[in-house]
Image (cartoon, rainbow, N blue to C red; front, side, top):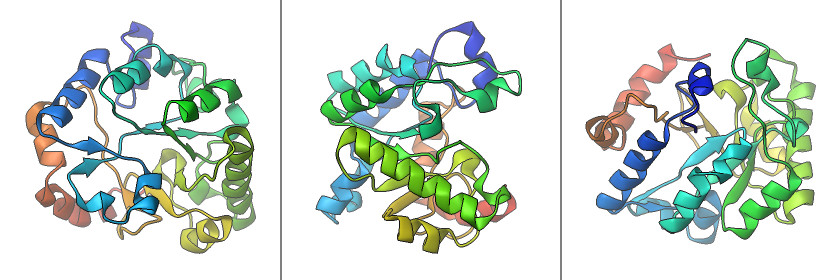
Length: 231
């Protein structure tokens, strides 16, 4: 999230400050509560209320400049997904394709997220397409990232975000064995706790499209559309 013109190359996965404020204003106006996955573990009914889970992939360091203070100001929280091989590094998967290089959070930053009441999730170790590698590599990627994050923040990591939305074969068995309770994708033909559908919020969204994306009818539409959008 940035107003830096150089970040245009990262869209739609990077949004402007104005768009972010529009999102938070909408959630407040319509009385949505932001929760994290650990809230669901503590209270199974938490997700049945008027709630949303805000998620940020890759953990860009500049989120501390605007997004995180804005969340704090509104007493909101979110889940931040870190690819652990890139702690204190940069988004080399984007840079390799000519997109803007962005500095990522380090260990101290993740500890600060935890102190602020945010949740940290795993985003694999090397930020790779898990569907394109063998099962042993997938097992390493999901276990290594979880273990490293838990050593840093001193608490259990319970959720995972598939890099590029790439859900591998046997994902249920692999993630369950690694100790995850939840995982999020972009497109998935069958939704369950380890393949939860998320939607992308981008600069082209309006209050009208937000209303649509948060509706029951949109969730039904995704059941039909997602199988044709699989990576």
